[in-house]
Image (tube, rainbow, N blue to C red):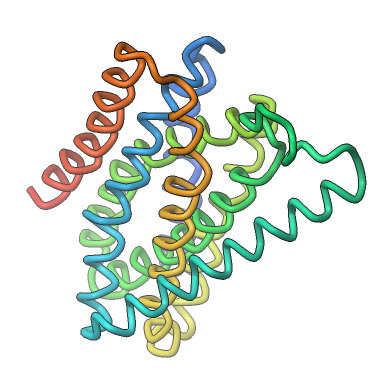
Amino acid sequence: MSVLLWIIAASIFGGALSVLGAALFALNASAKWINALVSYAIGALLGAVFLNILPEAVELSGDMAKVSGTVLIGILLFFTLEKVLLWRHCHHTHCEAHEPDTAHVHGRSGTMIMVGDTFHNFVDGIIIAAAFLTDVHLGIVTALAIIAHEIPQEVGDFLILLHSGYSKMQALGVNLLSSLATLVGGVLAYFALQSVQEIVPTLLSLAAASMLYVAVADLIPGLHKRTRLYDTLQQVLLIGAGVATIYTMGLFIQA
């Protein structure tokens, strides 16, 4: 089988398998657990940003200031995007932004997390292509490592989509569509790897910005609505569990 076919197969299989693996967990979660598991999603997002995505972007770029600046610009862009989404919503129906409970404002957190996830999937495709162009066996190992790394993050994405008002089937469809960016990144990298590699740190930084913004600006404020000691302890433990999952998967990949 040619290298291009290996890249296409690994990109499709890797993207779909990580989404479906996450779906087996997230879509079978009881509705009453969704709010609690959002805390786990926050931890997974923060862990992915600070333990994996940003360190990789800095390593590839070699310029910490450039990466930090891109993250800052990304946060401002996603703030603007959220404002646009709120503006459109307020001009087409009653404005939920002014209501006491905004836990299920449709599309805001979900849209932004999918934008960031699409960037990340695109970069995964580039990484898979680079590995296969080096050696087929390295490509296979790299694809498996990416699947293992993506599953806990995809679980977090599913939970955020459900928390944002998406149905289970909508969440599955949107995640599968986003996973196609892996295929696009892989094929594009095969034909133009050198030129594509130059923008990888920027794409990673933008992905980190979107995940960081969703976790800090959209999800964490909702946790403050539950102030009981039990709820607070549960939130802290689940956030820690999300971070620990990403950290553990990182150790597994390195091994």
